[in-house]
Image (cartoon, rainbow, N blue to C red; front, side, top):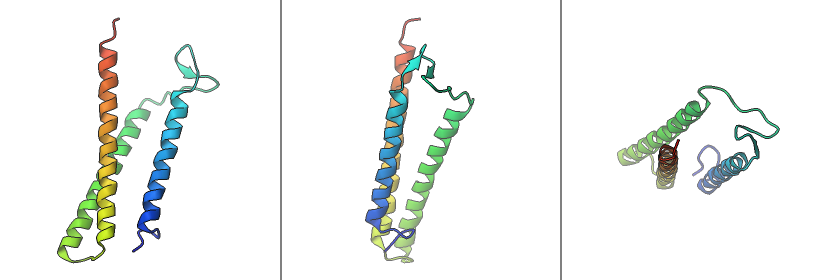
Length: 121
């Protein structure tokens, strides 16, 4: 059964491609040459005060939404409202992968924080 007009395989591949694009964009940003260690060369540093917190909040809301959708799909399957186990399992896997990615980001942030805090002043 198709979800949002896509087969489960196409949906997973679309998510994979989106993740790869985001990884490439992050890699490009992290490897951009800097001037004086502040702004990327040839560009202007984003000085929006809440840009990072907004991005983090948005990502957490998306993960929460996927978790809620997976829970609702599983509950609907348990009640017998749907018979498409593939859609339920796909929703559960999407939620699981997004949660694991969130945990990895958290771990990297904590590691970076610890590294910064252990630097001599």
